[in-house]
Length: 246
Image 1 (cartoon, rainbow, N blue to C red):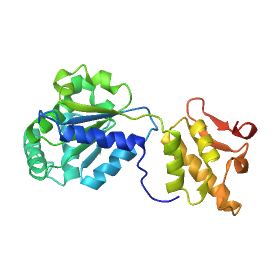
Image 2: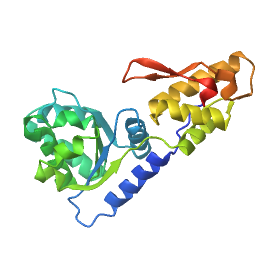
Image 3: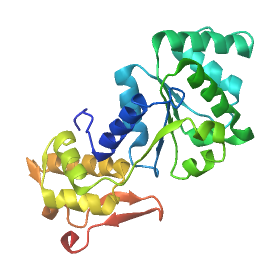
């Protein structure tokens, strides 16, 4: 499989969200919230952006405290994490402010315990430095964050990741797969995966191997009839083609 990043419709929505935050009127409203169900490509999209712009990317832990968060952020930025919390905060905020380093907090759902104290620490950083902070969480996290007005009032935009479209799947097959994938097979991958990018990638890897094993330069639906393409994570069963996928 080719090592390229595909700019899907969710990626475009994410870029539009970033533009909205960067063009905000109130400078303290520097938070961007990214939500959506598992498997829609949130983490991969945001991670790709973080690498591109040099953002600090953190994955929240279930046992995070404000100090634990600051320590991980300091280590990520290669800033001295030792000493009192207020000293670490001063060093981290100074570095972020000078360099205008964006921050990504993935799995932000873990930051809501203890009255969202970790997010309050992140809000303090954004208020002081005015850098963009991207919060990434599951589909229900927006409602949970809305209970904390001091935080939700700083969110300038919300991006909701949706199931991949048929065009997204066709484009992903075209750009990622080492062999040509016919449109009828791309449509079947879309149907079985229900638009979950994680399953789409697994299906592409499978059909690519099938094509290479059989010496095919192009693979279509007829070549994989009754082959298992994706795993149904909800029922723990596998979806298969039926009657050629029709």
